Length: 261
Image (cartoon, rainbow, N blue to C red; front, side, top):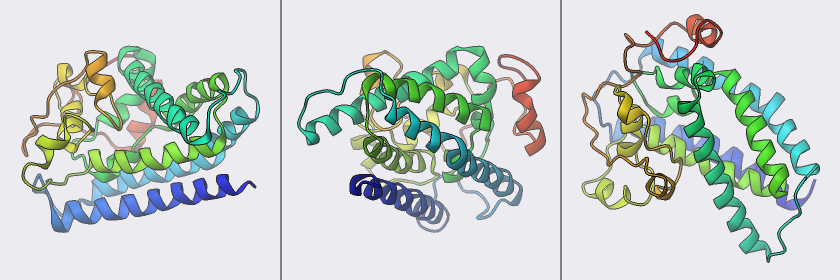
């Protein structure tokens, strides 16, 4: 295996383990925002199951499919110096993720799966990995199309994933940023305040702030909503009564279309 790929894989693993551990601890013992029980058993068991399925889906489906896509490019590689090429690929992958996220909200079939992520009424760092396996499989197919079209190498994809996993742990977390940080950072990067607006139990807010790392795409495409997070802000899906059992969450995408109770 090329050295670059090995380093990228290591970076992704470190980002995953360290990111989850750091933000899980910070939101409970250092900088909690919304006051909650330190360990909500039902919440952690439910989200823990999704963390497990996400890890398994990544190992058995996402990674093999991504590797195959990088080995069968359709487009021609850009003739750029390596540092510039990496930067271009990171930007294009981030744009693709913005588009995919937005499509999950605008296409009813995709929303069936993505709704499971939004049903969490007690958002924290574990919510970052709360995805239905169906969404993970569909998102991998979409991303592989982008990878093949742009001829993005595997190492660049892994480095992007390492960056993104830290971003999603950060902006899903229940942490209170030091005074002034939210105001200074939110015009440029996706902060907890911005992403909590995206999880607000109000349709107009839910369908905004689709960015994963930077705010630029939301401002460019008119989907930006300023941060106005409050500790008692209701989170979830408008028109629903709260979270569901793990079994119901797993089965829900196959039962009905669109948004619902």
